[in-house]
Structures are given as structure tokens and as C-alpha cells.
Length: 208
Picture 1: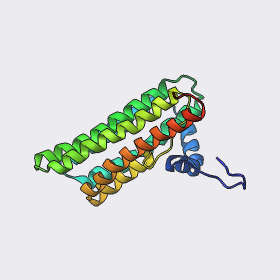
Picture 2 (picture 1 turned 60 degrees about the horizontal axis):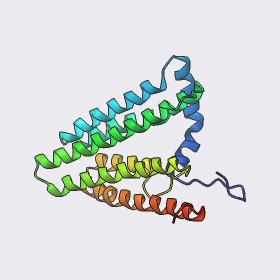
Picture 3 (picture 1 turned 135 degrees about the vertical axis):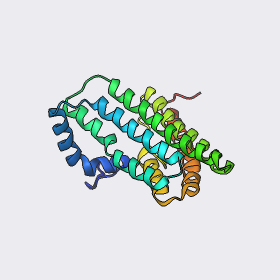
């Protein structure tokens, strides 16, 4: 998206990352497509990697969980690149990707909550649950908005920001600080998105 003076403006960090990496991801997507790799297989592999990272985190090995999660992060962009290379027309891929993303969120936060419960850290356990609830609701509001023909990618913590915070807190071991940021930030994002949809519907006369 560009402004009137020709400068490019991005609504989210995800949009910014996709723009600057599109050349690389497109090339890799074309290569994988020619090799016969299906985008749904890449999506599923990404979830497997997250599940492994979650298990490692549940055992308290946060740094290595972060490394595993970091290695699997590029797959989140490659499945879409392969789908574009094959000119995929059906809508199942988007549903499948979104569903597995929610499972991925659940695996990580459940792992952190489990580890906290084992060590009797009720605060971290509750923060993990609050962050999971907020992450799910951020995606839910967007999905509901799209059902109203509203593109709702706004907000403080979109998926890319949440992934970066997860990686940072696992690699540094600052779990509680990261969970505080996620627990508060995700719910603020939910409020931002609900308010955004409300304002659009109000201008369209869709609220009584």
C-alpha cells in the first residue's frame, strides 16, 4: 500500500515482512512447487515443528525451544508462496493454515502453563492462559470481521509481532516478561479490532 507521495505504507509488521521478503519466498515457492511439494504439507510440517518446540519448552529448555521455533518460522511464509506458485484457487488452504496456526498458539502456551504448574508458579500459568485466550480472540475477531467484508488486520499485536515476542522471550529466558506483554497486548488488540469494526459499520449505517 502506497501513500500519495509514493512512499509505501504498511498496516502491520506482517505486511512489511512479506513485502521485503517476497522475492526470496517467491523463488523458494516456485522451486518447491517444481519439486512437487504441496503447500498443505508445509503447513503441517510447521505445526509438527511447533509441537516439538512446545514439548522442549514444557521441559524448561526455553532457549532450545526458541531455536526450534525460529527454524520453523519461515515455513509460515513458504506455504503461501507455494500456493501462489501453483495458482491454487480453492479456499481450503487458508482455512487449513489458520486452523493449524491456532493449534500452534495453543501448543506453546499450554507448554508454558504446564511447566509453570509443575514448578508451582501460578502467576506464570495464569499469564499463559490469558495470553492464549487473547491470541485466539485476536484471530477470531479478524475472522468474524472478514465475514462482514471488513479487512481487519489492525492492532498492536498481529501474528508476526506475537511470534517475535515468543521467540525473544524463549531465547532470552524472560518468560514472565514476555507473557505479561502478550497477555496485555493481545487483549488490547482485540479491543482495537472490535472498535475498528464498530467504526466502519457505524459509517455504513450497519449499527442501530
